[in-house]
Length: 193
Image (cartoon, rainbow, N blue to C red):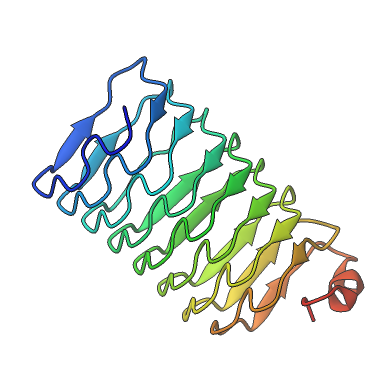
């Protein structure tokens, strides 16, 4: 599916991408404000940036198992998206990928993710908890900024991931759960205390 193919198709409600398709281009569904349902086959391994940008009616989506990266702005302002499962094949979550997904309450992050980029989950106001898999080694600035309902984080890595400033600013975190015996390592790690 080429870049911008359905850009601004405000009356598009649902679409099924045929088996055999391997990629969805940049901004392919950008601005499809009425899109509520999309079926993506497992043959798709590449999804471009801003692909579902401002798809404000999209409530759920299943990511194919072969996708390796969630590009920047992929789900930017998908204000009705309630849950997302990121498959193990994904290694990175791009900048502002889920920015302003205000109804997102459930994120299942696969064990292949190594990096979470700038503002990836910024302003996900309904998110109350998050589990960060042990594969994650870096979390960039403002990744969970202004997640106003976020109170609990579970981190599975025994070595604290490198995090930049303001990752959790604006949240209400009162509990950080780390692997047994790793508390001191997290307390002494930069920006974790």
